[in-house]
Image 1: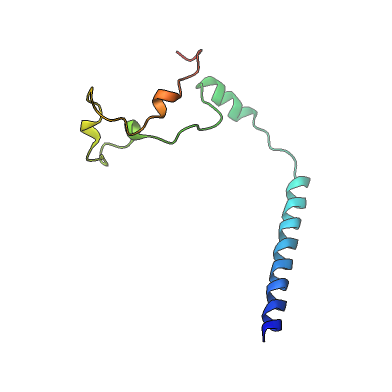
Image 2: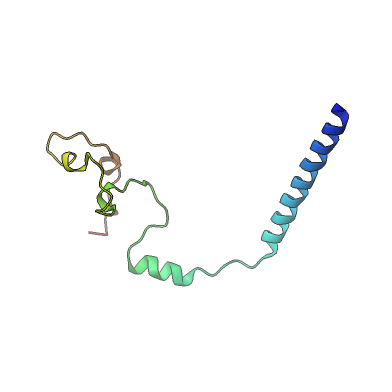
Length: 94
């Protein structure tokens, strides 16, 4: 029965390819979304349009602390989230 399995596998792959092609065509025919309100909000609050780092130890909710958090701010403490030393905020922001 290997031929039977191969047939159904190829049939499944063909259906998936056709669904993907149909989705591509449908998305290309849709009108482009209007982002002017979002752009105005981002400009007003000085938000960036993409995230360079997902580190968020300093902004997590206080009810969910890490057990090492009190010791990470010491002068000799090891920086577990080093992106702050590589990525600076935009020059005109401060």
